[in-house]
Length: 210
Picture 1 (cartoon, rainbow, N blue to C red):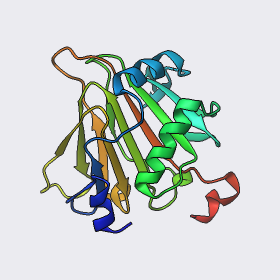
Picture 2 (cartoon, rainbow, N blue to C red):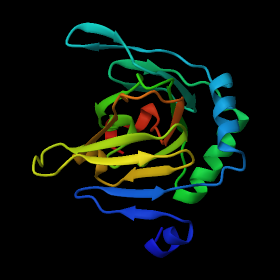
Picture 3 (cartoon, one colour):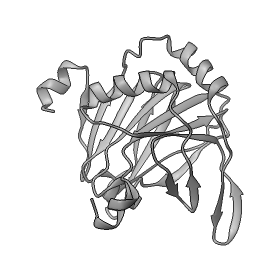
């Protein structure tokens, strides 16, 4: 998709070294954002996964749910997909139209309050391919995404607020060179859901680097 066509959809191409970021401050989902947030909180199959860090098990400081066509694994966690819901299919259709990319899976992260967070990481698992396209839709409370270059210590941490209804797309070499995360907040804040749409490769192609 060309820069001019992206601009026609309300997209901003953000300038970042070794990265390709597209950002829509607001997208029309066909439903009130607050109403959709409440519906997803109520209907999603939330889990609190356990991860192991340096041999010690921790509960993730947020809830998550995995929907789509294929399984997925990260940080030692094996996820089996829940079937697509009508709401998620409708949202996916809107995101695919804007991004010009098909997605077969979505990870929902539910930040219940100011204490929930996401550690710095890259979405660089083998099943996502060499240059994954990650489309991140935010609903609910505004939280700030932090991006930090993996090797360029001279580059400052980038802080990007993600308001309700915004869509951030990370593509190209972004995951290869940058980590991103969400810190806990010092002040009280309401719930937020982040939907990260992605395309997971079938098992038969994961060993080929496709």
